[in-house]
Image 1 (cartoon, rainbow, N blue to C red):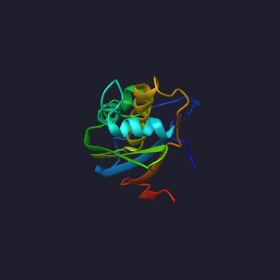
Image 2 (tube, helix red, strand yellow):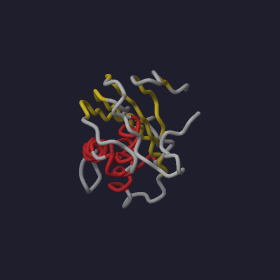
Image 3 (cartoon, rainbow, N blue to C red):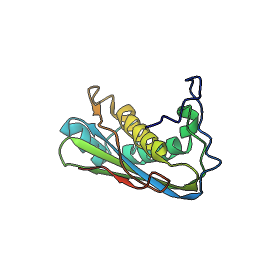
Image 4 (tube, rainbow, N blue to C red):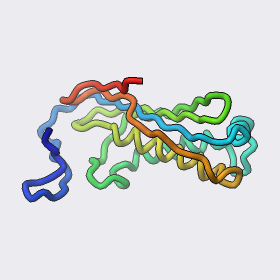
Amino acid sequence: MELTHFNEQGRARMVDVSGKEITQRSAAARSMVKMDPGTLAAIKEGNIGKGDVLAVAQVAGIMAAKQTSSWIPMCHPLPLTGIDIRFADNGKDELYIEATVKTTGRTGVEMEALTAVSAAALTVYDMCKALQKDMVIGPTQLAAKSGGKNGDYTLDS
């Protein structure tokens, strides 16, 4: 497999996507924050002093997806057409975060989806760290993608 992010001198470059076809593209990523049951209960009950943890994390994830090219050096700035952040939990000690990002463009939105869930998870940590400092974030992974020349992908799990 040829790595396209390197030029003939072996130096990093931003890939030229101008010859690629414009297609509908989407990606979903997920992450998890493992915490004490009391911390999860406080989030769900709205008992975190900094405010509504999930609402703030949702906005943070959306903002991060829109700014991915500012965070990740070789990412193209993309006109995103949709971003959705969802939360679920296991009722005990795990908060699940999933983001779906969409665009119509020449390159995919995998990094935008991954950035969204990462920022949302970090925001949960930030808002709850006064209660618990040893929360664990991850795994963070691409769950699915569609569109583009490499076709569709769905994580086996």
